[in-house]
Amino acid sequence: MQFDFNLRSSFLLIFFVHTLVYSGLFFYRYKKKEQRSSLWMGFFLLLAALYISPWMLGFSGWYGHQPYRNILFYVPFQHLFLIGPVIFFYVATLFNPHFRLNGKNWLHFLPAMLYLLFCIVMVVYDQLIVQQYYFLKKEQDPDFDDWYQIAGYISMITYFVASIKYYYNYRKTVEAIISNAAEFLFAWVRNFLFAFLFILSAWFFIAVFGLFYQINYVITWWYFLGFAIICYYIAIAGYSNAVEAKLFFQGSFFNTDQRIYLVDRVIPLSLGYVEADIQEISLQEINNNSEAANPKLALWKEQIEKLLTEEQVYLEPELTLLDIAKRLQTNISNLSLVVNTSFQSNFNDLINRYRVNHFIVLLDNAEHKKQTLLSLAFESGFNSKTTFNRAFKKNTGLSPVEYIKTKVDK
Image (tube, one colour):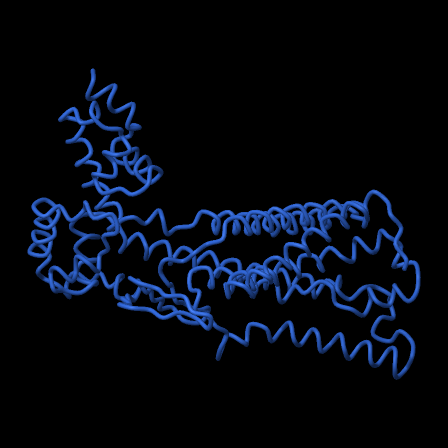
């Protein structure tokens, strides 16, 4: 088999092999744990490995020798119409483990299937019928035709924006209904999207640079090396930061209404999940902030304040807006309207404000001299050190230690 080992081909080969290994690990995790997000990440890493293959194999001498040249010409290695949908469905399955492809979702793969059909037509006509280059008269790899690269880039941008919007809606919904929202926001998803944004930015920079300066395949190799490094980071970080959803967020590319499901108890089975006491909340219901639709804002605000000040419900670490709605025998839209307009806040920030104030009262009573700050934070309703520190800094402008030095033990 033809493969010239040199600096450029060998570097890409290292990342190619490692990316394939991680792809296999994600597929194995999917098989063992039925974690659908692992399936999509496995596909993404497989596509990433194929993406760098033409440059890796090109520098190893494949373009200069047959039949390897025809393999590079006729086998589609860069599946640009697949990368975008795979990324979107990876994000979707992270927040909704029950997500399955159905109905309109299959339309996302139509451009990729049409391109594969086009590649099949090319190889059949050129190699089996006329037995010469017809579609490839210019003897250039069709994966790098301008129309395909530009259309593929637009596709990736579209699905990247959709993924950002999906994550934003998820984050907005969580902060609107859950008091310990930080535990549900998953920093890895944000980091993954930032990493992919870096890839898109690098492609755009190369394309714009090529409009003014001549770029050869040696210079472009650096882009593929950067792509390989970023995907290797995604593989390692994604495998070590497996997201276990504690609630299910249901949305789609075509539907503007997203729904979130709070599951009090989930029993995993070999064929799926059995849920008990599933609480369904619509994002449209949360965003229904028409003041005219509810003239009793002051009354609802008074009742919420009573729950917070007299019953101190904020001390419950996993308090949700739905819990408040049940106690007041009303619906999510009413309470969301009150929190957003009367309290000028989202539910997460409102509850954390009361928790911080409770913590400050404990400090004023010199409880920090008897217990650790973390135990006082837990006593105030927080259930993680990170969330407590972030909320305290946001509400006071100081860290807990700084606050004690300047406000308490001065």
